[in-house]
Amino acid sequence: MHAGSLLAALGSFLQARAQGALWRLRIDDIDPPRAVSGSVGAIQVSLETHGLRFDGDIQYQSDHAHRYDQALKTLDELGDLFHCSCTRAMLDATGSCQNDCASKNFTTTEPTSIRVKVPQNTVITLNDTFLGRQNWHLGQQLSNFVVRRRDGLYAYQLAAALDDVAPLATQVIRGRDLLDSTPRQIFLQRRLALPSPEYGHLPVLKDQYGAKLSKQQGASALDNKHPAKNLRSALRDLGQPPPPSELTDSESVLEWSRSRWDPLRVPR
Ligand SMILES: [Zn+2]
Image 1: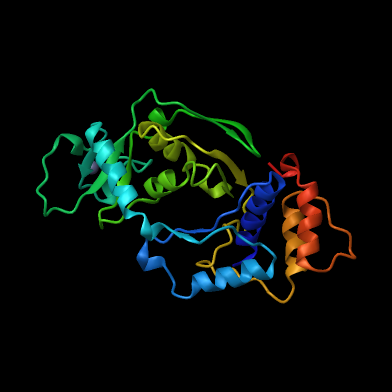
Image 2: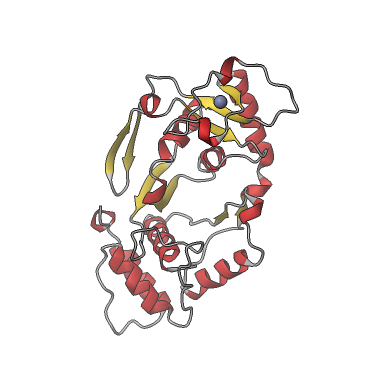
């Protein structure tokens, strides 16, 4: 974990705990080439060192193929899906297929992605925990998007939409870099008659070049020797009051912060 992932973990932990809710850990590992062996163990150690204890077992998206297949079947029965053979260069600026793939017949051996059609009049409204009301004219912004990739892997939008519903999840707290994904996921939940959770998008830490902190971009790992210091820094970025200096262990910093957690103080 790096400072950016701690910020998201801490914000979601405090939001859950302040409401007496459970806090679950899910590993989004549907993209095997990106999964790093040993990283789950390292995440667990880092969370525990910072006093961030999750409830229940870890969930793995790679265990949910049946759920994703079932949803694709339902969407197909609704007539919402079509195959697309476009390469990236053939797509429009929004990543939508504009090449009439929906009316083509493909052979089963041709590599295609599967896309879901978004009707032109689709409007998605969201009452974000931190940002307030958000509106998207999704049908005008996006005419279709990928739910199963050309390489056969499930698209992130599909997997997240299906895993982020009650009773699996009632509230999803994550980084603002995913705000653009949320209307697509709500759209899929609606088509599948699933209850959307409440969504809240936290600020994202950026490096000196304005890019989101990420392991791929070389963000340095958290120093697990100084958990309370790391938590204080994350609390500051979340706009929360600084815990008294005599609190030096992560447990007491978290307990103090939990009882004072105020989502309205999170920077917009
Ligand atoms: Zn196409």
